[in-house]
Image 1: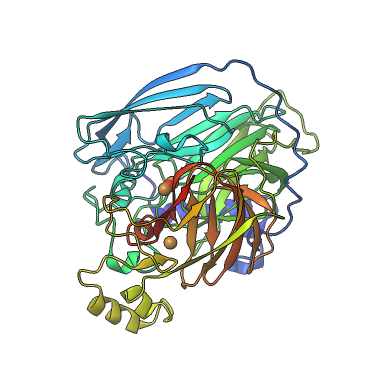
Image 2: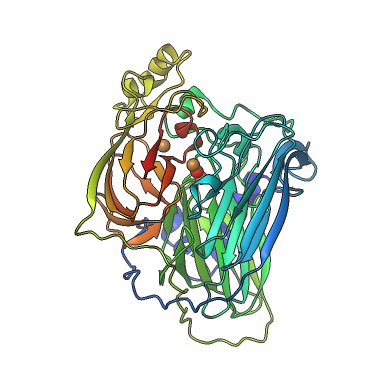
Length: 497
Ligand code: C2O
Ligand code: CU
């Protein structure tokens, strides 16, 4: 089993002997990489997807259950994990046009549900207790049936006690294929999710007042696909599709590739005109699809998270001989998705402020820098018993569960276009997610971004961001995806009729 230190040591070594790239430069100082730079062109020029005929029905039985997994390493004590099905964080693939009928049977000691993150499906299938269905109690079942309308990299997770349930591994990946004009030569999923484990394999508290009232509580064990680092062989000179999903409840990732050329081909599953990947920052719940041109046989490339004291290797891919030969890397864009486009001329503008809850400890300390010792003192004295730290438009979600549904944050009209003017007035980043919709990110006050489609947008401290979309009917959750933030107030819902 590799210790974290050994893994990091390898990262440095790998970088030092690797091809040209960030790691070879500047005597131990990692060069500043600009985040989400505006190297992208517009989204608009993607080819239309050819019509598909008659998909198949996937009839799945998914048992939510407890299992055991060696998350600390093969020679270390095992941990009790929660899974949707027989494997930890399963990957399920369907094709565009296919339908899904997923019968979820709950054999967990807690009630649960399945939310299909990023899928534009009917509201009744959205999996939110008390908003779209009752929670599925132990021994009960619920049938989710829908036809995914878009291609891409999505995931499913419960919408109950999320920090604890997702924290134990309860989630999975749903891939809707059919977006590739030119088939990639390999396709790897990389689920980034840390574990909050004690050395004996037991779980540590998934929520802490210190974490919940600030940037969130971090795991103690870094992991990708439940191991330290993904490793795989890939065909030399092949085009390798990597689907990165940030399933962590807290961590931000700044992904980049060392040792090969890479382009971004989709964000949150939504195709975008390919642009070179310098690095891309993505927060909990966000996905990044990249295409990497594998180097010659015998060489390798590494996907790093550069948002760390030292770059952390998320995946190492070694080229093995293949029938492909060296040729220019000219990635074909994915087929466009059929997302309804908002009409900016007639769109109604609505303001949303993400802030500390009025009167909460988070409000009291929100103007102090994170390393100010006064912050801990204030939190210790104020936090006792308080579980509400955050608000949207000064409104907080009452309690951790959904039983006492607050009034909606806004009432929208189905089919109308909206522009949400969002401001983060806290000193912490918040990835904001809207259920049931794919929105376009129009502008940011802090970064020059390409316009792109997404279902979750990362708001940095004090940042203003505008998103636009066409409202679909239903009761849709709108919340921060830092799990401890949504459970301590930064969650609301929209009523669209
Ligand atoms: Cu992944 Cu309420 O969302
Ligand atoms: Cu947040």
